[in-house]
Length: 188
Image (cartoon, rainbow, N blue to C red; front, side):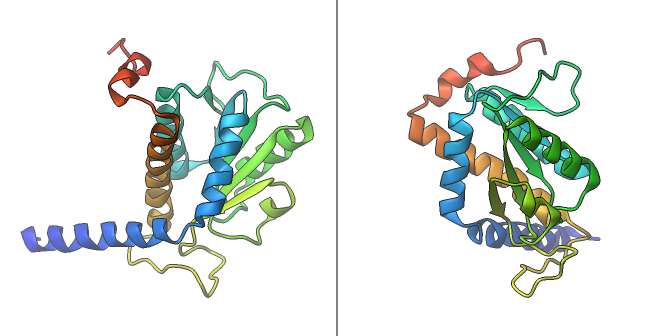
């Protein structure tokens, strides 16, 4: 291992992320943000590294004054028809998020799926699909291939999608970034 290897890998990862973010349909992103802004609460569900990305998105949106909830946390309130559930699942087939999405839909909440496979089981449940068209188990012809292991590119692009959409909200809402510190954790 050497310095050049690190630089090569850093370029590979960031270029793949850039390709993935540029491939997301901007109209779907605008609809996604409007759906979030219209909701009373925004719930997030996923598993594994996808959940970690969603937790970071939920935290960032909370910093913007959006009422966010990560499904399964001890202080989770009830979801209602005034709320939105954001499901992160590249395949759209992951059992836990799929089951939670069905439950949320039966209660009347809107369901937004952020994933890579447009023809998954989530299709029958989701109100909106935001596609990050990266390599998945579906192996669709238009997927962005990655040299990284497993689903790393989806998880990275999802995290960056959250920060990108947060910046869109900051700009659209005219939020003063310096004032956001009031929402930051202060029991550190």
